[in-house]
Image (cartoon, rainbow, N blue to C red; front, side):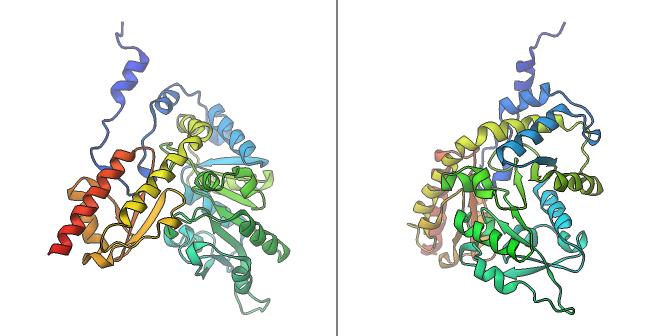
Length: 365
């Protein structure tokens, strides 16, 4: 007979936590013991046939939480965004988005390769578009101009330091776009962070969008997966395009089980990450050569300028790594920190101590 109980066996599978303070992204989070237990015990079926009960439950709950008719589980946020773009547009059209948008910068030109569209980039203060800015970029009805097919917003705006759309601003863009006959998609990879910062529900702040993608695998802590929500007709089309992109995952209930816990339980803890990000921002603001506007840090992302330290962002990140702190350079001047459930206040303090020491040494040199 086997001597180990299931929980003991699962505990043996739990990897040891890395010693480094990893502030590169909230994508590095590891599933909780509760998620691992749920994954081990998940009831599964073939999701391509619509027969995985755990996936079906996850999709139903996501639709309910967002006040939508339907939802679909996809392997990644990129796939969710690109499926939405494909459904909303036709080849030869433009997609209006902010110049730092994830769909433009980090999705491998898939809006061109898969949907045959080009981005119409709009620079915006703190990454937050307004209706007047969007309206000016809508193409006139001239036969030799690529026509606007879609408006896409990102909330929170990742590369703008986790900035959040005021509900009234997003609503005005949706109303204006709809009046112009245009759909609006939301890249809501971190929409639960936005909802936490605003103190409002995700259904309320996304109600006017035609489609919403959100990630389970970032601040919510699931190991894999994102959701796309919308109308029943929209999701029926999304299912076909998910298959076309290779996203039919068969017995995906083992992943959806972790996603259910992420969806139901993890939003309640996001405020801790926001508090830790503000703690980091206040500390960084005291370091010579570092520039950050701590007042603008409202979620779990902060982007700060290190050009005054005499080091490039890449050099500074290399020195941080030597001291057990992982971070990403955005460009030669900017560094990004992202807080999450696997970095506590002690880890944030360790990161600040490393920054202070590195910058002090650089100043003396």
